[in-house]
Image 1 (cartoon, each protein chain N blue to C red):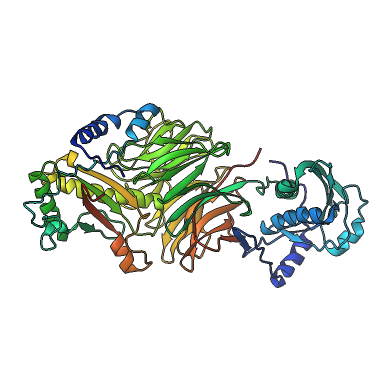
Image 2 (tube, each protein chain N blue to C red):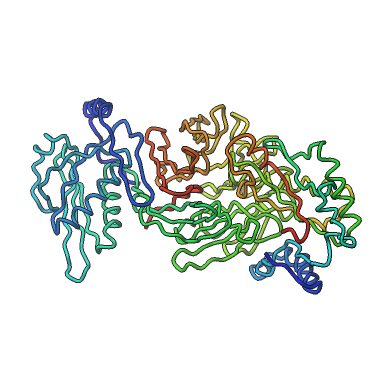
Length: 174
Length: 432
């Protein structure tokens, strides 16, 4: 993980993010090998008003809820997560410096590569829902971990359900 | 491909079938990957591999490799050769070998050159026709003795079955031990395993270049999937695809110059083609759903792939010259991981049915399909380069193991490691 400590580095990396990814030469790719994920600036993002518990961390605040669960082989964001998604979209649109990484995950059953694509669909579905509600594209990166990083290690339905998931991570949390 | 020069007679086959019903196949244990044969061909060729001449300990080590290879293939039945060493120049008493039940016999010697180098010589005989089927001599050494044994077994296999042997080939796979991932390369019998890469993050989808010199794979070491090409001789690794989002599912073109990969940089999981150094990225096609797991046909004319464009994952193919994709699998609601046999006749894939995820094959001419296993967690099929066996990952007792099954479903082998999960197998090409 690369954590930039200054806003100057943040700006430089953001520039790399914008320009680096469009090139296709080997040289260009080694440039793009700089994490495309948005780096953390410790002073921005997670709002922390005068020592009060951050709304992102406050267990009584819906913003502390970060996981969207999916049905088997599905990537539609279910109605029960509308409120959660809306709250994060609102937070992102009100805090323009906040950035998130959405990690899509799947259960272990079936093809690893298909699951990687499925996890990407799940992360993309959450990203799209946030975009529609006002979060800007450059505040969000969606990636997939497929079935490779299970949160629940078991091999039963409960574990599978826990792993069919997209997680929202704010800058500083990844 | 040479023509078969040796076919068991009908009465012999019947006799063998009876013998097979009674025989219990030995479990051949090795230090690393353990290969266990759990099924065998219906008409195994009875063959005697005599103890070779030369220094007895080394000769025995050599013939043990030859016998083990042939026996594990499931196509041969080992006839007890007795304890007398027989060299490639010894006179053959065909009547006596016929009396023991052998249809074929191999004899040879291991000659020391004094400088640590040795020469393994052997000759193969057709006992029924009472004639030599030829022989060969291979330069070797004590550390390379196993390799010489594999080459002898390859020679015998090809002479007697008419198809190339794969005992000298290598396999790649990933071992997960705790939170450690190792991309390993081993001989086809599971011996001589070496780690090409060890990582704390997942490694998936290893794919051999057609010349066997490089492996493409997906590593998560940068906290996201990135495609690498790894030169096995030099250990040098190169990032070939690290675009925004996910980079995965590398597949080599038959000429080894290009890779098909799956990128999400432009939205969705879509198939792109790039040069093996990462340059020249072009999109193969555009779809609204998931397109992944590309595989080139051996003639390079088609790319087979998995897509959910019809609402559920099915296998399709598209001409590399362009045009519309054509659906290939129709039975069932989940068919993934297409792999083509080297001759292009068969498609191996994973199908989900009532019993779980199982390895299946489709005859691409007749479109007939056959489920080859009764396991429930099959993944990642990989054809042997002679098309005979299909290596795949499955799960036994909650642990990942590698299994192999013949394309006709008759011969089954299991490869497991004492500690750790084994997954993501890829069978390397024939050794030139």
